[in-house]
Image 1 (tube, rainbow, N blue to C red):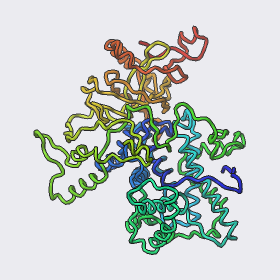
Image 2 (cartoon, rainbow, N blue to C red; image 1 turned 135 degrees about the vertical axis):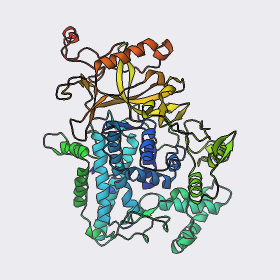
Image 3 (cartoon, rainbow, N blue to C red; image 1 turned 45 degrees about the vertical axis):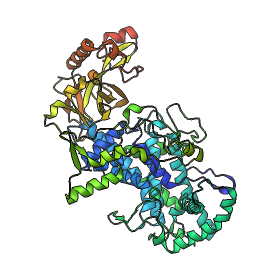
Image 4 (tube, helix red, strand yellow; image 1 turned 90 degrees about the horizontal axis):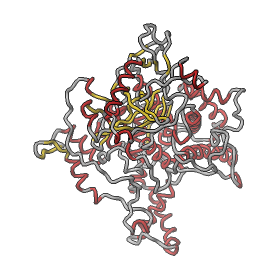
Length: 600
């Protein structure tokens, strides 16, 4: 725990609903999330949600990139993430590793969300959940796979989450001290929810003059307080804003309580008396909960060991230095700013359907009263998607800033105009599995290092065809100029007899991964490596040099001058280019680094 406070023991705070929305935006980040060495892009999350039998319409709504301020939408995506079941797909080790990383992320989301929405939790249980979320987040930031904190999430989001949780513990301590253990503490009263409600009432009282001045503010604050009191006594008269709506859950089964709009003290059923709370016990109990994630538990165990230099490490100093006052890195950005933009636009998802359209389609599918599509020139067209695109210009929200609103600047910083005009329902081709490239499939490609081209092995984490992100691509479509494949580099090392007793292969994948690269489809070749089951529940790929050299020759024959300019350029590392042991190269270079696998 970070124990720094300001004058008069004041601590900063962050609104929890804004944190929830930014956690959803994190899942939509075009740079992805690097966790357990796996890079999770929005397309990867989409694939796993669909694999969990979530309807395509619902997934499209959850991953809608434009609506970043809908609290209910944020809750839905975070909940679907933590509901992903565990799998053990030995035939697709990449898919299993990605699911494990997503489940870890889902566990973090569950622990940070439940204290604010599960009305049956006691104050002690709320603090244990928040402590667990803190330890999970610290361990994720300290994982050796991450190049920096920004590869996991924006530094500002990490700071705000830790500040929010730290303020909760300090506020409980202050209530215990001020009330001599006789008071109550409602966690849901923290944040700006009540202040936003007050100013919402004030804004409606002003009328058509949205830019109120100081005199109007003074004259109407008294009336605003009276209105708030009346609405508190008669909550059925209060129609709360949609974007502030957050569902409440019951502890048994975590069913949504539909009768609740805003969660208020009268709604809370758990024991919130501070007399039954021991802060140190709650904090330690949260640490013990991390044992359900062995990889993160090992990270925290190293920090707690006597050999580690961890005396300067706390939740706001994950690497021993204060990150609050530190200068952000070049690849970092402030995700809380209204006008922030990310630069890597090629991995953006196409704008999906609106939530209202999603509900309409679901109702239609249940009732079967009429078809949710019509035909244009013999092709099926979704009615909701068609109307959504046609009326898009009338739904562009204006900025809350008066000057921006007068200048017709939209409220949210969209990085590009919607290019999704695909109204037509895609018919699935009934072709064999070997004719497709899908997510998490191993592929071969080329990278440029030290002025030369090298064959590399990667794992597919995004597919783009005709400027649209798709879950699979036909092998014939790889030659299309609009096809792009994004893959995460796999590290290969020489295989031993223990790895392959048959000695037919000479390279194996030690489950290590590198960065993500995007190349044209023509620079990708599917591979079908052998699979070793030596380690239980941890299968790994085996490769043969002859096969990879043939693939390298194919790339060399068809590589054009234009395509060579699109090959990603990287710096040589200990993991790439792939190297053999005890070869002539080690004699010339006088190092343990040896001959490259394939040099074009």
